[in-house]
Length: 314
Image (cartoon, rainbow, N blue to C red; front, side, top):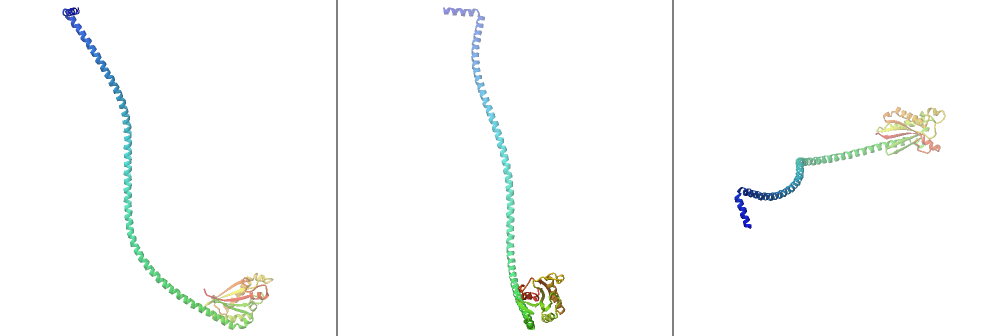
C-alpha cells in the first residue's frame, strides 16, 4: 500500500510536473533555510565569542595603554633625570678640570717659588754669615771701645777723686783753726766734698747779710775752690725747725725764704770773689734736711748752716 501510495504520488508528480517542481523548490528552500539558520546560529555564536574576546582584548589593550602611558611618563622622567645628571656631570667635570688646571698652575708656581726661595735661602745664608762676621767685628770693636772708655773713665774718676781728695786735704790744712773751733765741718764721700759753715759765723740772728768774720772764712774757702775747675759748686741754705716770728716774718714768712736768701748771698759772694758763675747754684731746704735733732740748742745750732758742696759735672 505504501508502494501504491508512492506510485500514486509519483504518478501525480508526473502528471503534475509543475507542482512537483514547486514542491521540490519548497523542500529545497526549507532545507536551505534550515541549513542557513544553523550556520547563522553557529556564526552568531562565533561572533559572540569573538566579541567577548574583542572586549577582553580591548580591556587588556586599555590596561596595556595605561601601563604604556605610565612607562612613557616614567621613561620621560628618567630621560629628564639622565639629561640633568649628564649636565651636572658635565658641569662637575668642567669645574674639576678648572680646579685641576688651577691646581697645576699653583703647583707650578709653588715649584718655581720654591726654586726662588732656595736661591734666596742661599743668598740669605751668605748675607747672615757676612752680617754675623760684621757684627762680631763690631762687637769686638765696641768691646774694645767700651774697655778703653771704662779705662779712661776709671782714670778720670781717679783724677777727680784725687782732685777732690787734694781739695779736701787743702781745706783741712787751711781751715784747721775753724774746724777746731767748730765753725766749719768738712766731709768727703764718694767724690762729693761738703763744707758746712755754721750760721753764727756767717750771719747774725734772723739776718741774711754776711758778717765780716764770715767773709774772712769764706774768702779762705774761695782761695782753695778757685783751683777746682772740673766741679760744680752748689750752695745750700738750711735752718732749724723753729718758725719765723715777730717782725722778721713780714720779710721772711717761713724758713724757706730765710734759707734761700742766705744761700743766694753766699753764692753772690763766691761769684764776686772770682768763681765762675756757670759753676754755681743756690738751693734752699729750710728745716727739711737736718743733720741733728732740733729738740736741743746744740742740735738746732748744727742744723742752721750753709753747705758748700763740690759735685761732678753732668
